[in-house]
Amino acid sequence: MTCYFKYLQEIFQIAGIEVTPENKRELDKVIHSLVHVKYKNCSSTWKAVKKILAENESDFISRLKEAWNK
Image 1 (cartoon, rainbow, N blue to C red):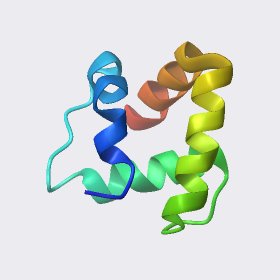
Image 2 (spheres, rainbow, N blue to C red):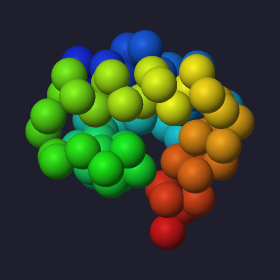
Image 3 (cartoon, rainbow, N blue to C red):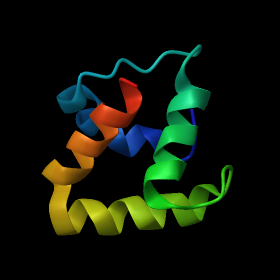
Image 4 (spheres, rainbow, N blue to C red):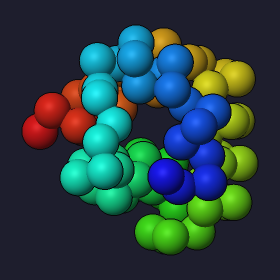
């Protein structure tokens, strides 16, 4: 898993997203896109995700769910 996925297990659960070896890369790309960080920049992505979650967790979950289901 990517460096921050272990911290987002509850978020994925709430969003109804099952992380598998087959989909984790695509999910990682979706998260990078949501926080506007270039793909594969793990630490910057996690920093941005933490900030967004602190500001409005439910909005992030909604946007993640919507982006994932496209």
